[in-house]
Picture 1 (tube, helix red, strand yellow):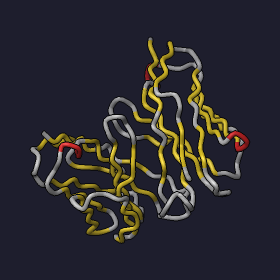
Picture 2 (cartoon, helix red, strand yellow):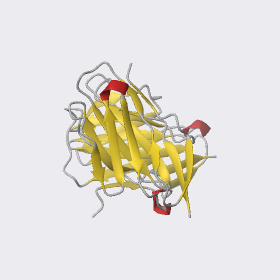
Picture 3 (cartoon, helix red, strand yellow):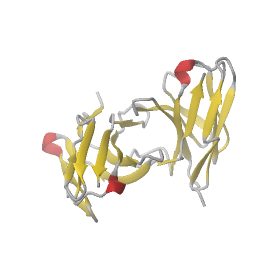
Length: 115
Length: 116
């Protein structure tokens, strides 16, 4: 029933580890996104994919690598985790990429804590 | 440059009070879209409304209303007779062809506390 789902919901890990967050949408949307929300609640886009093709890569360190095996899934893999990576990561989807009025629907978020 | 400013960091009201959350945006585009999202304490982001730049009609949905004024580049959100369940962080957002690859730019959010 969930439109945009993410796993895991919480992730606690040590510095230097590699971890992945998974996102799936069952809305039939073409476009998916990853956002990072910092401790001050500021939301910033990281990536967007349209039909499995990378569209936006918002100057994110290359330790972050998104992968879209199909248009319903967009996973985020993070290598060599750092303390500053601690944040809430939101996945979102929209029906299509353009025009820009397309509403984005968000997943529940993954709370990542790097110790 | 594209920008969304939510100058109110936190607002605290008592239940049943009306409250207005301000949103001021900057864009050079003539076609753009504005959004409001709600983030309750549980953390998810909930879509509330979308408005395009050609439609300046105010919108009302139950206790929620939105006032879009292009002359002042504002898209303010009013909650009438606030309730404790309205306590959340509210984000205003802007999307336009020139937000750089169809990005949606979010304001910093306004945290609303509604006390019983």
